[in-house]
Length: 237
Image (cartoon, rainbow, N blue to C red; front, side, top):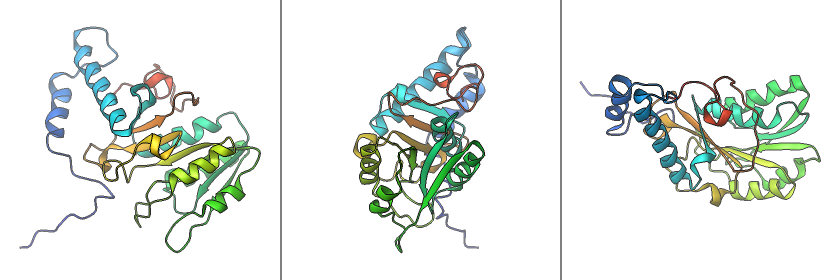
């Protein structure tokens, strides 16, 4: 019988070689809480710090600019609600965004946030002129994904981010579909906030991260023990 061939890596990827072995160590042997000050917490704490540094190096960022989350969707939510919490104003996104962005923007209307959805052309691209025209005096954030999970369209993020910054507006991109596939750095893109998801490039499900440019202040979504610089409380994975 012929075996099926897996071609849906935009949905999820298999674990990269060696990842399961490393994970098993921290599930079975070095299982301590990374926040614990005793012996059993040391190795997991070092592992989390190492992972943070490795991801920062991949993105061209600093380790303290990386906040780990439970998924890419959570990272998107932290970016959008973290910027807009306790504020009124305006957010801009585009028509083919992941539901984690579109539904979060819709939910913000309950607190008085307005949002604009930019159209895309026949290739799925945002017209930079449309973004420039949509910006208002009270725009707080622009969120445009780096690459679309269904079409593969790569947006001109550096150009769009520059337009937002010229108006004094923060820029977020969901790079879950390009991390580990398309070479880039946060400096090249010029973004303030960037989302990644581990299972999109050889990592496990249930792990995401948000790059937060130094100097950008967010309100936490999950409060508690103060992990992840107070922005995402909960025992580190």
